[in-house]
Structures are given as C-alpha cells and as structure tokens.
Image (cartoon, rainbow, N blue to C red; front, side):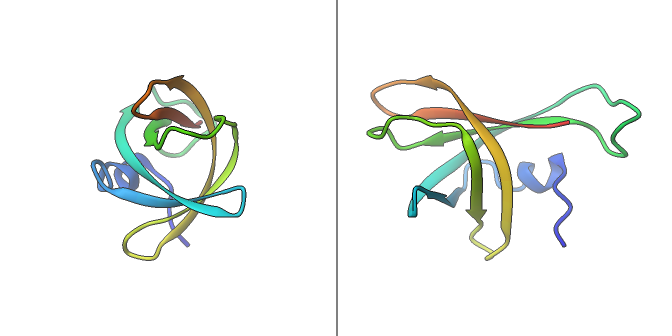
Length: 95
C-alpha cells in the first residue's frame, strides 16, 4: 500500500500523472506540494498538492484516480481552483 504523504507527491513535481476523468485518461502535471502545520489527527504532516490539467472540459471536483509513471495508483479528492486558457489548476488537500 502506498503511503500518501507529502514526500510521495514531492517526488512527482514536474511529472505527468494519468488521471481518469469521466472514463477517459488525461495527463495532469504535479505542480507543487505545500506542507502545513501538523495536528494530532494525522501521524504525518498535512499537505496540499496542486496539479495542472489540460483546458477544454468543464472543470469538476471529485474523486480522482491517478496512475504515476511507475504504475502506482492513488485516489484523492481534487477541487478546481483556477482556470486559464492554458490549464486548469486543481487542489487536493490531505488533512
């Protein structure tokens, strides 16, 4: 089982991951990871991950299934937070 911590996503910064969106695969890029102040409900540090997705579809929040270049599969909830002509930015919060 993969431990979804900040270090896992930090190793993917700048790399594409394949995201299943409405039964189709899209290439999203891991842009950054922000570590936040720890709390007692989590044994490791809470963090946020920011992704760039291709423009063109109506952005929707929801449970995403990602496959990394190393064939690791992870699921997370992502919310669109910005959109430009070039990309849609999504945020995934790990509390």
